[in-house]
Length: 222
Image 1: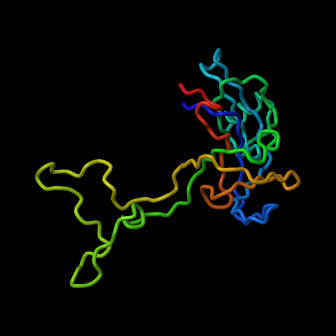
Image 2: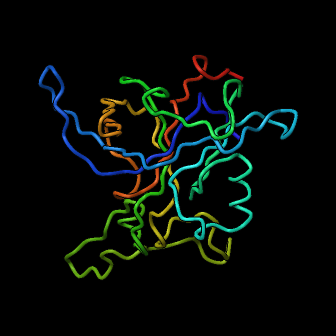
Image 3: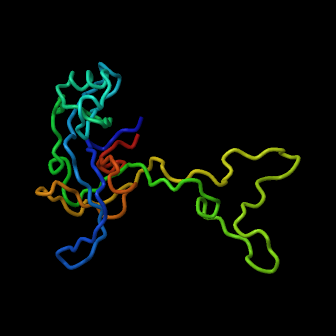
């Protein structure tokens, strides 16, 4: 399990826009909003769980939307019913307690670098050209191989297709992390973050936002 550089939060992708800086430079940003949540639901320690971590809940839901074990877990912390739980493994959990609310502008500042995880947009079943950037075959001179895959291996030896062979298949819809993106603006009135660049998924997607890991600066080299 990897160590985080610090406590993070969860947010909802709202979309992209252009942000004009004071010097007139235009920056493409993704706007991330925050629903009710980002509340500490559990504090794990080395003595009780074998490692130090803080579990955070996000997005309030009705009681009947959760199972009884899920409700019991949240009630133990005195927290409201929440749909999503994420765990941030930290070097120290001092200062955190159950039902503590994490305020975004206290966790992050403008100019900070963050790592953002989310589920990418699903593309469905795609061919080799779109999925793996294969080249196509000749379109003229009698060629009948335009977008086909081509050879997928030798003959009698090895007599099989090697595992991991790049072939057509399901594309997208997988978890990914984009590292070291800059927070351009924090709007306290609208309760949104503006982060430079594109983030995974479509508007409405849940994102995990944590301080960027920089080895030797905020996480140990070993």
